[in-house]
Amino acid sequence: MIGLLASILDGVLVGAVYGLAAMGITLIWGVMDVVNLTHGAMIVAGMFGVYLLVDATGVPAYAALAPVLLAGFAAGVALYWVAIHRVVGQPPLMSLLATFSVNLVLIGLGTALWGTVLFNVQVSLPGFSIGRYTFPGTHLMAAVLTAVIAGALYLFLYRTRLGKAVRAVAGNREAAELVGIPTTRILALSCGLGVALACVSGALIATLFPFTVLSGDAYQLKSFVVTVLGGMGNPTGALLAGLALGLLEGVATPFMPVSWTLVLEFVLFVVVLIAFPGGLLSVRLRRRRP
Amino acid sequence: MILRRPFFWIIAAAIAAFAAAPLGGDVELRESLLLAAVYITLASNLNIMLGYAGYVNFGSIVFFGLGGYFCIWFMNSLHWGLVGAVLAAGAAVSAMAFLFGLGILRLRGIHFALATIGVVEAVMAFVTTFEPWGGSTGIYLSTELFQALGGPAAALWTIYYLLVGVMGLSLYLSYFVKRSKFGVGLRAIGQNEDAAVTLGVPAPRYKAAAYSLSAFLPAVAGGLYFFKGAFIQPADAFDLTLSTEAIVITMLGGQGTIFGPALGAYLYEELRGWLLTSATFANFQLVVAGVLLLAIVLFAPGGLMGLIYRRFPRLKRVLE
Image (tube, rainbow over all chains, first blue to last red; front, side):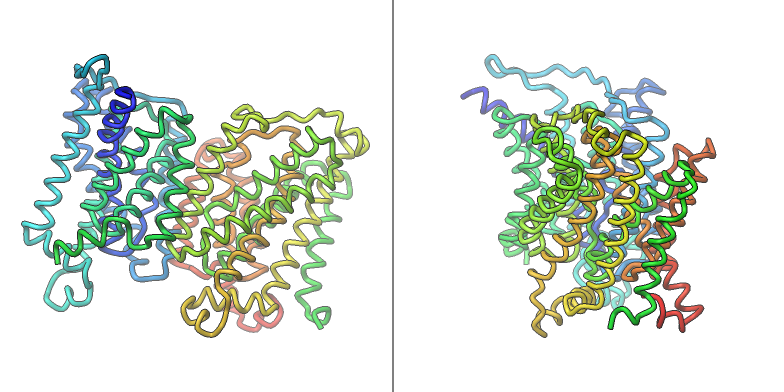
């Protein structure tokens, strides 16, 4: 029984990172109605960013997060200008295919450079124990850092002028343009933020589990599940849904092989989309913040 | 009458060309054309969802891979003949796609596309842990099975002609669907699903039927393809490269047209052959495919057929 509780608690800690990744996808989705299919590749880019920085300079993994975050932002802005700018507002087929093709380029470069072997980042943090069970320190650290980053994003979106502009563009792009907000630049900024979140969550995942160039697909699927659970375009919902997904994984892991959790999550994804197209959490949150 | 239309005969001529080209015994040419036939089969069937109904299916490779698995399993465990096994594999995958389709095709636009990505991950996770299908190591076929077709060399020729037949059926299927009431309904869904539903198009049923229909021939092709190699494993069966290539080919040729995917498949196969021989590019196949797809989406969303039609509008009367 305590084993199950420990597994659940650990699942929630990891789930916080899933929530962070999903915030990246939901931000882009909410602001410009584009599903970013480079998300998985950007998560992997974050993983390799940390790996390479630690490998080359020997700094601790957590010190590498800031450069990864900045590089991710730059990559996101570049992604916007290269692939998304021309397809914003077009039928979904076009933006899906445009981001998908960038994903192919990134995955192709990754497999050509590093193959598909396993990598991992060495982090030594003392764990903490409850009775016979020891939680890895990295899991706790990842959850704490997630809370810090999510808090910073919240402050940015709700307490700064620029954040207000982002929310205005998400609400109604034409109206925002009419009141003098430079909407194109805001779109590029949001894309940068979304990709930065994907990269930094990838960097955190790299401190938890080993990874390959192709790991991104599974995490991208998790991000979609979380996004759908939390309601599209709702960062707070994404974070809560991430915790919920982590909890679910924590409950499921003792009872089924690890690869089956993906099947379970996919079924959840379809069921939620059909039964609650607006997301499970969106209704309540929207009412609280009119 | 459909027989009076020139396009009917253009398809027939293309099939005849595929059948006649390697008759001189040129094995290398045959292998290249065999791959082109697989590409055309995958792209044409993908086009039914993507080009007509406007629904991008990132998981079309699942049909191909599952078809391969069913066929190999029928032959290996139940000792069925090749033709019976591939037809049964096609029917099984088609039936699964229909059941699946009824579920996920209630989703629209973006959500459907995301669900198809999920289908790939879920099916792969399932097959990798499914012991009767060999889990992650896969299934090996005994090469003795080739004896039933007159030895390995003759068997390869038989497989080639069967695949060319599957390719021809795919092209005719695309053509008949496009000309039918069903096809008009699908294209109405592609242009505006709400309007189509208002006008009485039974959208969920049509989409499920299209999804299931576009599963049959890729599954048959998968069965033949993996029988040829006498081996199947999850990494090959659900290869990311092949499923993206089907999308790139359809977009390159021109989505929604019938000639387009065939043209795209031929050109892509030529390009690929050239890239693989150049040592620098062999590793960067996905990168090239990605750049190509991005260029098409951004600058020529109608693909090659769109460009050709703009230059020679009269061709619209002959080509489809």
